[in-house]
Image 1 (cartoon, rainbow, N blue to C red):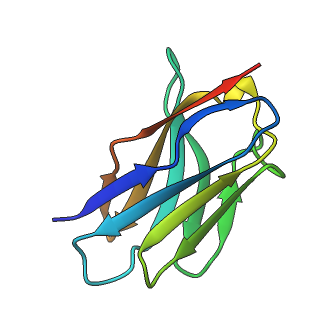
Image 2: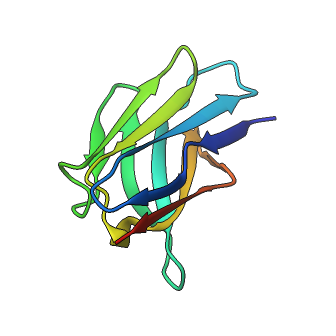
Length: 115
């Protein structure tokens, strides 16, 4: 059974930093792609950043230059370094992994940025 567990969320002041982690377990092979999504109250879930097994990354325009996605394939762990945080970054952040045609989601971790 595939399981993704996020950690690292919390409360931070605007301008601060947080590092999110997503640990994957239950599979023998690396995921094809992994990504971070977020959902703010009353809004749809949106892509924040994505990384392929080959290392290709994409970012939402709103986080370019501030967030960095990285992964450790041996540990099957995904990271999201978030710098220069803004109140509008407040959301529940979810880790997603794709293996073949199936997507797996973590339970989410709350990030709250105070002004």
